[in-house]
Image: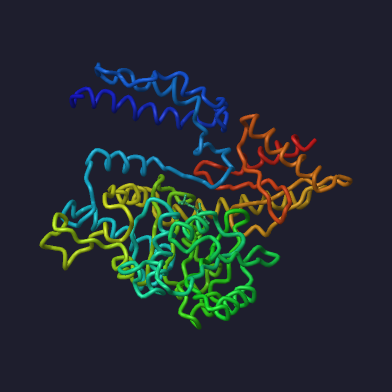
Length: 469
Ligand SMILES: *Cc1c(COP(=O)(O)O)cnc(C)c1O
Protein backbone atom coordinates (compact mmCIF):
# COMPACT_ATOMS: atom_id res chain seq x y z
CA UNK A 1 0.00 0.00 0.00
CA UNK A 2 1.28 3.44 -0.94
CA UNK A 3 0.76 6.53 1.17
CA UNK A 4 -1.94 8.04 -1.06
CA UNK A 5 -4.05 4.92 -0.77
CA UNK A 6 -3.41 4.81 2.98
CA UNK A 7 -4.71 8.37 3.24
CA UNK A 8 -7.83 7.57 1.24
CA UNK A 9 -8.67 4.35 3.10
CA UNK A 10 -7.61 5.79 6.43
CA UNK A 11 -9.89 8.80 6.15
CA UNK A 12 -12.76 6.56 5.10
CA UNK A 13 -12.09 4.31 8.08
CA UNK A 14 -12.08 7.19 10.56
CA UNK A 15 -15.38 8.39 9.07
CA UNK A 16 -16.78 4.87 9.37
CA UNK A 17 -15.78 4.63 13.04
CA UNK A 18 -17.43 7.98 13.81
CA UNK A 19 -20.63 6.96 12.01
CA UNK A 20 -20.59 3.58 13.79
CA UNK A 21 -20.32 5.35 17.13
CA UNK A 22 -23.03 7.90 16.25
CA UNK A 23 -25.47 5.13 15.29
CA UNK A 24 -24.41 2.63 17.93
CA UNK A 25 -27.47 3.06 20.12
CA UNK A 26 -29.77 1.81 17.33
CA UNK A 27 -28.07 -1.59 17.08
CA UNK A 28 -28.87 -4.72 19.12
CA UNK A 29 -26.22 -4.79 21.86
CA UNK A 30 -25.37 -8.50 21.70
CA UNK A 31 -24.29 -10.03 18.40
CA UNK A 32 -26.87 -12.38 16.93
CA UNK A 33 -24.66 -14.60 14.78
CA UNK A 34 -24.55 -18.36 15.34
CA UNK A 35 -21.29 -20.20 16.02
CA UNK A 36 -19.35 -20.69 12.76
CA UNK A 37 -21.39 -18.17 10.78
CA UNK A 38 -18.63 -15.58 10.39
CA UNK A 39 -15.93 -18.16 9.65
CA UNK A 40 -18.06 -19.83 6.96
CA UNK A 41 -18.17 -16.59 4.97
CA UNK A 42 -14.41 -16.21 4.68
CA UNK A 43 -12.16 -17.93 2.13
CA UNK A 44 -10.41 -21.01 3.47
CA UNK A 45 -6.96 -19.93 2.26
CA UNK A 46 -5.13 -16.59 2.15
CA UNK A 47 -4.89 -14.69 -1.16
CA UNK A 48 -1.86 -15.81 -3.15
CA UNK A 49 -1.57 -12.43 -4.86
CA UNK A 50 -2.47 -9.18 -3.14
CA UNK A 51 -4.50 -6.79 -5.27
CA UNK A 52 -4.94 -3.90 -2.90
CA UNK A 53 -6.88 -3.84 0.34
CA UNK A 54 -10.04 -2.89 -1.58
CA UNK A 55 -13.04 -1.41 0.17
CA UNK A 56 -12.19 -1.98 3.83
CA UNK A 57 -15.27 -0.17 5.03
CA UNK A 58 -17.56 -2.45 3.02
CA UNK A 59 -15.67 -5.44 4.37
CA UNK A 60 -16.19 -4.29 7.95
CA UNK A 61 -19.89 -3.65 7.40
CA UNK A 62 -20.48 -6.99 5.71
CA UNK A 63 -18.19 -9.47 7.44
CA UNK A 64 -17.42 -7.98 10.83
CA UNK A 65 -20.25 -5.86 12.23
CA UNK A 66 -22.80 -8.71 12.41
CA UNK A 67 -20.37 -10.54 14.70
CA UNK A 68 -19.70 -7.64 17.05
CA UNK A 69 -21.21 -7.27 20.51
CA UNK A 70 -21.17 -3.54 21.09
CA UNK A 71 -19.18 -2.86 24.23
CA UNK A 72 -19.46 0.90 23.86
CA UNK A 73 -23.25 0.78 23.44
CA UNK A 74 -25.08 2.93 26.01
CA UNK A 75 -27.17 -0.11 26.99
CA UNK A 76 -24.16 -2.35 27.62
CA UNK A 77 -24.50 -3.51 31.25
CA UNK A 78 -22.59 -6.81 31.05
CA UNK A 79 -19.20 -7.83 32.51
CA UNK A 80 -17.48 -4.45 33.03
CA UNK A 81 -17.47 -1.13 31.18
CA UNK A 82 -14.77 -1.23 28.51
CA UNK A 83 -14.76 2.41 27.59
CA UNK A 84 -12.74 3.23 24.51
CA UNK A 85 -12.95 6.96 24.16
CA UNK A 86 -12.37 8.72 20.85
CA UNK A 87 -9.17 10.30 22.17
CA UNK A 88 -7.78 6.93 23.14
CA UNK A 89 -8.62 5.52 19.69
CA UNK A 90 -6.50 8.29 18.20
CA UNK A 91 -3.68 7.43 20.59
CA UNK A 92 -3.81 3.79 19.46
CA UNK A 93 -3.78 4.89 15.84
CA UNK A 94 -0.72 7.06 16.46
CA UNK A 95 0.91 4.12 18.28
CA UNK A 96 0.32 1.85 15.29
CA UNK A 97 1.48 4.55 12.89
CA UNK A 98 4.76 5.02 14.73
CA UNK A 99 5.22 1.26 14.97
CA UNK A 100 7.88 1.71 17.64
CA UNK A 101 9.02 -0.87 20.18
CA UNK A 102 9.60 0.39 23.70
CA UNK A 103 11.49 -2.54 25.17
CA UNK A 104 14.51 -0.43 26.13
CA UNK A 105 14.79 3.28 26.75
CA UNK A 106 17.01 3.62 23.67
CA UNK A 107 14.60 1.80 21.33
CA UNK A 108 12.27 4.83 21.67
CA UNK A 109 12.99 7.16 24.58
CA UNK A 110 9.60 8.88 24.24
CA UNK A 111 7.78 5.57 24.80
CA UNK A 112 9.53 5.01 28.14
CA UNK A 113 9.51 8.57 29.42
CA UNK A 114 5.91 9.39 28.48
CA UNK A 115 4.88 6.09 30.10
CA UNK A 116 6.76 7.08 33.27
CA UNK A 117 4.94 10.41 33.35
CA UNK A 118 1.53 8.81 32.64
CA UNK A 119 2.02 6.25 35.41
CA UNK A 120 2.89 9.08 37.76
CA UNK A 121 -0.15 11.11 36.70
CA UNK A 122 -2.37 8.06 37.28
CA UNK A 123 -0.75 7.47 40.66
CA UNK A 124 -1.67 11.00 41.69
CA UNK A 125 -5.18 10.63 40.29
CA UNK A 126 -5.97 7.63 42.49
CA UNK A 127 -4.33 9.18 45.56
CA UNK A 128 -1.37 6.82 45.96
CA UNK A 129 1.81 8.13 47.62
CA UNK A 130 4.99 8.79 45.61
CA UNK A 131 6.41 5.55 47.05
CA UNK A 132 4.74 3.66 44.16
CA UNK A 133 6.24 3.20 40.70
CA UNK A 134 4.13 2.07 37.80
CA UNK A 135 4.45 0.33 34.47
CA UNK A 136 1.84 -0.45 31.83
CA UNK A 137 0.98 -4.10 31.25
CA UNK A 138 -1.50 -5.67 28.88
CA UNK A 139 -3.91 -7.00 31.51
CA UNK A 140 -4.42 -7.38 35.23
CA UNK A 141 -3.97 -11.14 34.80
CA UNK A 142 -0.40 -10.58 33.62
CA UNK A 143 0.34 -8.04 36.34
CA UNK A 144 -0.94 -10.42 39.02
CA UNK A 145 1.15 -13.25 37.62
CA UNK A 146 4.22 -10.99 37.77
CA UNK A 147 3.42 -9.99 41.37
CA UNK A 148 3.01 -13.61 42.48
CA UNK A 149 6.32 -14.51 40.86
CA UNK A 150 7.98 -11.65 42.78
CA UNK A 151 6.39 -12.91 46.00
CA UNK A 152 7.54 -16.46 45.25
CA UNK A 153 11.11 -15.34 44.63
CA UNK A 154 11.22 -13.14 47.71
CA UNK A 155 10.01 -16.02 49.87
CA UNK A 156 12.34 -18.57 48.27
CA UNK A 157 15.50 -16.47 48.27
CA UNK A 158 15.49 -16.27 44.47
CA UNK A 159 15.07 -20.00 43.96
CA UNK A 160 14.54 -19.47 40.22
CA UNK A 161 18.28 -18.97 39.84
CA UNK A 162 18.94 -22.42 41.31
CA UNK A 163 16.41 -25.25 41.57
CA UNK A 164 13.21 -23.27 41.28
CA UNK A 165 10.40 -24.71 43.36
CA UNK A 166 11.78 -28.21 42.79
CA UNK A 167 14.31 -27.83 45.60
CA UNK A 168 13.67 -29.23 49.01
CA UNK A 169 11.94 -26.18 50.45
CA UNK A 170 8.58 -26.18 52.15
CA UNK A 171 5.56 -25.45 49.92
CA UNK A 172 4.69 -21.77 49.46
CA UNK A 173 1.05 -20.78 49.95
CA UNK A 174 -1.11 -18.05 48.38
CA UNK A 175 -4.27 -16.62 49.99
CA UNK A 176 -7.20 -14.87 48.33
CA UNK A 177 -10.88 -14.58 49.09
CA UNK A 178 -13.36 -17.07 47.74
CA UNK A 179 -14.73 -14.17 45.66
CA UNK A 180 -11.35 -13.38 44.04
CA UNK A 181 -11.10 -13.27 40.26
CA UNK A 182 -10.28 -16.44 38.32
CA UNK A 183 -7.00 -14.82 37.23
CA UNK A 184 -5.67 -15.36 40.77
CA UNK A 185 -6.15 -19.11 40.53
CA UNK A 186 -4.61 -19.06 37.06
CA UNK A 187 -1.58 -17.05 38.25
CA UNK A 188 -1.13 -19.38 41.23
CA UNK A 189 -1.01 -22.34 38.88
CA UNK A 190 1.23 -20.67 36.30
CA UNK A 191 3.65 -19.32 38.90
CA UNK A 192 4.25 -22.87 40.07
CA UNK A 193 2.61 -22.76 43.51
CA UNK A 194 0.09 -25.39 42.48
CA UNK A 195 -3.64 -24.85 42.89
CA UNK A 196 -3.54 -27.02 46.01
CA UNK A 197 -1.59 -24.19 47.65
CA UNK A 198 -4.19 -21.51 46.98
CA UNK A 199 -6.35 -20.90 50.06
CA UNK A 200 -9.74 -19.51 49.13
CA UNK A 201 -10.69 -17.67 52.30
CA UNK A 202 -14.36 -17.43 53.23
CA UNK A 203 -16.09 -14.07 53.00
CA UNK A 204 -18.45 -12.19 55.30
CA UNK A 205 -22.02 -11.02 54.67
CA UNK A 206 -20.70 -8.30 52.37
CA UNK A 207 -18.59 -10.78 50.37
CA UNK A 208 -15.32 -9.36 51.75
CA UNK A 209 -12.49 -11.60 52.97
CA UNK A 210 -12.80 -12.61 56.62
CA UNK A 211 -9.50 -11.74 58.23
CA UNK A 212 -10.06 -14.09 61.17
CA UNK A 213 -10.33 -16.94 58.66
CA UNK A 214 -7.24 -15.67 56.85
CA UNK A 215 -5.27 -15.66 60.09
CA UNK A 216 -6.54 -19.14 60.88
CA UNK A 217 -5.41 -20.45 57.49
CA UNK A 218 -1.98 -18.84 57.88
CA UNK A 219 -1.54 -20.42 61.33
CA UNK A 220 -2.60 -23.80 60.02
CA UNK A 221 -0.08 -23.63 57.17
CA UNK A 222 2.70 -22.52 59.52
CA UNK A 223 1.92 -25.35 61.91
CA UNK A 224 2.12 -27.82 59.02
CA UNK A 225 5.52 -26.49 57.93
CA UNK A 226 4.30 -24.60 54.89
CA UNK A 227 5.36 -21.02 54.08
CA UNK A 228 2.70 -18.31 53.75
CA UNK A 229 3.95 -16.37 50.73
CA UNK A 230 1.39 -14.00 49.20
CA UNK A 231 -2.06 -12.60 49.85
CA UNK A 232 -4.13 -11.19 47.02
CA UNK A 233 -6.58 -8.65 48.41
CA UNK A 234 -9.38 -7.73 46.05
CA UNK A 235 -10.55 -4.13 45.94
CA UNK A 236 -13.79 -4.52 44.03
CA UNK A 237 -14.63 -8.18 43.35
CA UNK A 238 -15.99 -9.21 39.99
CA UNK A 239 -19.34 -10.52 41.18
CA UNK A 240 -20.46 -7.84 43.62
CA UNK A 241 -17.67 -5.21 43.90
CA UNK A 242 -16.82 -6.28 47.44
CA UNK A 243 -13.75 -4.76 49.09
CA UNK A 244 -11.46 -6.92 51.19
CA UNK A 245 -10.28 -5.09 54.36
CA UNK A 246 -6.80 -4.21 53.11
CA UNK A 247 -5.55 -2.51 56.30
CA UNK A 248 -6.28 -5.60 58.41
CA UNK A 249 -4.89 -7.91 55.74
CA UNK A 250 -1.68 -5.89 55.63
CA UNK A 251 -1.37 -6.19 59.43
CA UNK A 252 -1.73 -9.97 59.25
CA UNK A 253 0.78 -10.13 56.39
CA UNK A 254 3.41 -8.02 58.17
CA UNK A 255 3.63 -10.44 61.07
CA UNK A 256 4.88 -13.14 58.70
CA UNK A 257 6.62 -11.17 55.94
CA UNK A 258 3.90 -12.08 53.41
CA UNK A 259 3.66 -10.20 50.10
CA UNK A 260 0.37 -8.33 49.60
CA UNK A 261 -0.90 -7.77 46.08
CA UNK A 262 -4.04 -5.67 45.57
CA UNK A 263 -6.29 -6.59 42.65
CA UNK A 264 -8.24 -3.40 41.96
CA UNK A 265 -8.65 -4.17 38.26
CA UNK A 266 -12.17 -2.80 37.98
CA UNK A 267 -12.56 -0.56 41.03
CA UNK A 268 -9.18 1.19 40.99
CA UNK A 269 -10.72 3.80 38.72
CA UNK A 270 -13.16 4.73 41.50
CA UNK A 271 -10.22 5.98 43.57
CA UNK A 272 -10.05 8.99 41.28
CA UNK A 273 -12.96 10.08 43.50
CA UNK A 274 -11.56 11.08 46.92
CA UNK A 275 -14.86 10.02 48.53
CA UNK A 276 -14.22 6.40 47.45
CA UNK A 277 -10.68 6.03 48.79
CA UNK A 278 -11.73 4.76 52.21
CA UNK A 279 -12.75 1.58 50.38
CA UNK A 280 -9.09 0.64 49.87
CA UNK A 281 -7.83 1.99 53.17
CA UNK A 282 -4.47 0.40 53.99
CA UNK A 283 -3.36 0.13 50.37
CA UNK A 284 -0.09 1.93 51.13
CA UNK A 285 0.97 -1.14 53.13
CA UNK A 286 0.72 -3.45 50.11
CA UNK A 287 3.67 -4.50 47.96
CA UNK A 288 2.01 -4.35 44.55
CA UNK A 289 -1.29 -3.41 43.00
CA UNK A 290 -2.98 -3.38 39.65
CA UNK A 291 -5.90 -1.52 38.15
CA UNK A 292 -7.28 -1.28 34.65
CA UNK A 293 -7.77 2.14 33.06
CA UNK A 294 -9.06 0.01 30.16
CA UNK A 295 -12.23 -0.79 32.06
CA UNK A 296 -14.38 1.95 33.53
CA UNK A 297 -11.97 4.83 33.02
CA UNK A 298 -11.86 5.38 29.27
CA UNK A 299 -8.48 4.33 27.85
CA UNK A 300 -9.14 1.58 25.32
CA UNK A 301 -8.04 -2.00 25.91
CA UNK A 302 -5.27 -2.91 26.59
CA UNK A 303 -3.91 -0.76 29.35
CA UNK A 304 -3.38 -2.16 32.79
CA UNK A 305 -1.58 0.00 35.37
CA UNK A 306 0.69 -2.12 37.50
CA UNK A 307 2.35 -0.56 40.56
CA UNK A 308 5.07 -1.81 42.85
CA UNK A 309 6.51 -0.30 46.01
CA UNK A 310 9.93 -1.52 44.94
CA UNK A 311 10.28 -2.28 41.23
CA UNK A 312 13.67 -3.88 41.94
CA UNK A 313 11.63 -6.99 42.76
CA UNK A 314 10.32 -7.05 39.19
CA UNK A 315 13.74 -6.41 37.73
CA UNK A 316 15.43 -9.03 39.90
CA UNK A 317 12.93 -11.63 38.76
CA UNK A 318 12.29 -10.63 35.15
CA UNK A 319 15.39 -8.73 34.07
CA UNK A 320 17.57 -10.21 31.37
CA UNK A 321 20.74 -8.75 30.02
CA UNK A 322 21.87 -10.46 26.82
CA UNK A 323 24.60 -8.71 24.84
CA UNK A 324 22.26 -7.77 22.00
CA UNK A 325 19.99 -5.79 24.32
CA UNK A 326 22.67 -3.83 26.18
CA UNK A 327 22.97 -0.07 25.59
CA UNK A 328 25.26 2.55 27.04
CA UNK A 329 22.40 4.27 28.89
CA UNK A 330 21.35 1.15 30.81
CA UNK A 331 22.52 2.36 34.23
CA UNK A 332 20.53 5.60 34.21
CA UNK A 333 17.20 4.76 32.55
CA UNK A 334 14.25 2.38 32.85
CA UNK A 335 14.24 -0.52 30.43
CA UNK A 336 10.65 -1.65 30.78
CA UNK A 337 11.32 -5.05 29.18
CA UNK A 338 12.76 -5.97 32.60
CA UNK A 339 9.54 -5.11 34.45
CA UNK A 340 7.28 -7.76 32.97
CA UNK A 341 7.15 -10.97 30.97
CA UNK A 342 7.17 -9.86 27.30
CA UNK A 343 10.19 -8.31 25.68
CA UNK A 344 8.50 -6.22 22.99
CA UNK A 345 6.06 -3.53 24.04
CA UNK A 346 3.69 -1.13 22.33
CA UNK A 347 3.57 2.59 23.00
CA UNK A 348 0.38 2.28 25.05
CA UNK A 349 0.99 5.45 27.05
CA UNK A 350 -0.09 7.49 24.02
CA UNK A 351 -3.73 6.49 24.29
CA UNK A 352 -3.80 7.29 27.98
CA UNK A 353 -2.10 10.63 27.42
CA UNK A 354 -4.50 11.65 24.63
CA UNK A 355 -7.43 10.54 26.75
CA UNK A 356 -6.34 12.49 29.83
CA UNK A 357 -5.67 15.61 27.79
CA UNK A 358 -9.14 15.39 26.32
CA UNK A 359 -11.19 14.40 29.38
CA UNK A 360 -9.26 16.01 32.25
CA UNK A 361 -9.44 14.59 35.75
CA UNK A 362 -12.50 16.66 36.65
CA UNK A 363 -14.28 15.43 33.53
CA UNK A 364 -13.58 11.81 34.52
CA UNK A 365 -14.79 12.46 38.07
CA UNK A 366 -18.06 13.88 36.79
CA UNK A 367 -18.71 10.81 34.66
CA UNK A 368 -17.86 8.38 37.46
CA UNK A 369 -20.19 10.22 39.85
CA UNK A 370 -22.95 10.05 37.26
CA UNK A 371 -22.50 6.26 37.11
CA UNK A 372 -22.50 5.87 40.90
CA UNK A 373 -25.72 7.88 41.10
CA UNK A 374 -27.30 5.75 38.36
CA UNK A 375 -26.39 2.58 40.25
CA UNK A 376 -27.93 3.95 43.47
CA UNK A 377 -31.05 4.96 41.56
CA UNK A 378 -31.45 1.48 40.08
CA UNK A 379 -30.88 -0.14 43.48
CA UNK A 380 -33.62 2.10 44.95
CA UNK A 381 -36.09 1.13 42.23
CA UNK A 382 -35.33 -2.57 42.60
CA UNK A 383 -35.41 -2.42 46.39
CA UNK A 384 -38.83 -0.78 46.35
CA UNK A 385 -40.46 -3.14 43.83
CA UNK A 386 -42.42 -6.15 45.04
CA UNK A 387 -40.56 -9.50 44.73
CA UNK A 388 -37.37 -7.81 43.51
CA UNK A 389 -34.20 -7.92 45.63
CA UNK A 390 -30.82 -6.22 45.65
CA UNK A 391 -28.67 -9.17 46.69
CA UNK A 392 -25.38 -7.43 47.61
CA UNK A 393 -24.36 -3.99 48.88
CA UNK A 394 -23.99 -1.51 46.00
CA UNK A 395 -20.54 -0.12 46.66
CA UNK A 396 -19.89 1.37 43.23
CA UNK A 397 -21.55 0.90 39.84
CA UNK A 398 -22.46 -2.79 39.92
CA UNK A 399 -25.96 -3.77 41.03
CA UNK A 400 -26.71 -7.45 41.69
CA UNK A 401 -30.41 -8.17 41.66
CA UNK A 402 -32.94 -10.91 41.34
CA UNK A 403 -36.65 -11.40 40.95
CA UNK A 404 -37.95 -13.77 43.63
CA UNK A 405 -41.72 -14.21 43.43
CA UNK A 406 -43.28 -16.16 46.30
CA UNK A 407 -43.74 -19.88 45.91
CA UNK A 408 -40.71 -20.61 43.70
CA UNK A 409 -37.93 -22.79 45.11
CA UNK A 410 -34.23 -22.07 44.49
CA UNK A 411 -34.15 -24.21 41.35
CA UNK A 412 -37.21 -22.53 39.85
CA UNK A 413 -35.82 -19.10 40.77
CA UNK A 414 -32.59 -19.88 38.94
CA UNK A 415 -34.49 -20.79 35.78
CA UNK A 416 -36.69 -17.72 36.14
CA UNK A 417 -33.80 -15.25 36.57
CA UNK A 418 -31.68 -16.84 33.83
CA UNK A 419 -34.76 -16.52 31.64
CA UNK A 420 -35.08 -12.81 32.40
CA UNK A 421 -31.41 -12.15 31.54
CA UNK A 422 -31.60 -14.22 28.36
CA UNK A 423 -34.79 -12.52 27.21
CA UNK A 424 -33.19 -9.10 27.55
CA UNK A 425 -29.93 -10.13 25.91
CA UNK A 426 -31.75 -11.81 23.02
CA UNK A 427 -33.98 -8.77 22.53
CA UNK A 428 -30.94 -6.63 21.75
CA UNK A 429 -32.32 -3.81 23.89
CA UNK A 430 -29.62 -4.22 26.52
CA UNK A 431 -26.94 -6.68 27.53
CA UNK A 432 -26.25 -7.93 31.05
CA UNK A 433 -24.56 -10.82 32.82
CA UNK A 434 -26.29 -13.57 34.77
CA UNK A 435 -24.12 -14.82 37.62
CA UNK A 436 -24.27 -16.91 40.76
CA UNK A 437 -23.67 -15.53 44.26
CA UNK A 438 -23.94 -17.75 47.35
CA UNK A 439 -25.51 -20.43 45.19
CA UNK A 440 -28.24 -18.01 44.08
CA UNK A 441 -28.81 -17.20 40.42
CA UNK A 442 -28.62 -13.43 40.09
CA UNK A 443 -28.62 -10.78 37.39
CA UNK A 444 -25.61 -8.50 37.44
CA UNK A 445 -25.99 -4.97 36.10
CA UNK A 446 -22.68 -3.19 35.56
CA UNK A 447 -23.28 0.47 34.80
CA UNK A 448 -20.61 2.74 33.37
CA UNK A 449 -20.34 2.80 29.59
CA UNK A 450 -19.26 6.26 28.49
CA UNK A 451 -22.67 7.14 27.01
CA UNK A 452 -24.95 5.43 29.51
CA UNK A 453 -27.33 8.02 30.95
CA UNK A 454 -30.19 7.70 33.44
CA UNK A 455 -32.64 7.15 30.58
CA UNK A 456 -30.78 4.00 29.50
CA UNK A 457 -30.80 2.64 33.04
CA UNK A 458 -34.50 3.45 33.35
CA UNK A 459 -35.18 1.64 30.07
CA UNK A 460 -33.28 -1.38 31.37
CA UNK A 461 -35.33 -1.38 34.57
CA UNK A 462 -38.54 -1.28 32.54
CA UNK A 463 -37.27 -4.14 30.37
CA UNK A 464 -36.36 -6.21 33.44
CA UNK A 465 -39.83 -5.77 34.89
CA UNK A 466 -41.38 -6.61 31.53
CA UNK A 467 -39.29 -9.76 31.18
CA UNK A 468 -40.12 -10.83 34.73
CA UNK A 469 -43.83 -10.72 33.86
C1 LIG B 1 -11.40 -7.65 35.11
C2 LIG B 1 -10.77 -8.16 36.32
C3 LIG B 1 -9.61 -8.95 36.26
C4 LIG B 1 -8.99 -9.41 34.98
O1 LIG B 1 -8.61 -8.34 34.18
P1 LIG B 1 -7.75 -8.56 32.86
O2 LIG B 1 -7.11 -7.21 32.69
O3 LIG B 1 -8.71 -8.88 31.78
O4 LIG B 1 -6.77 -9.63 33.09
C5 LIG B 1 -9.05 -9.35 37.45
N1 LIG B 1 -9.56 -9.00 38.63
C6 LIG B 1 -10.67 -8.24 38.74
C7 LIG B 1 -11.19 -7.87 40.09
C8 LIG B 1 -11.30 -7.78 37.58
O5 LIG B 1 -12.38 -7.00 37.69
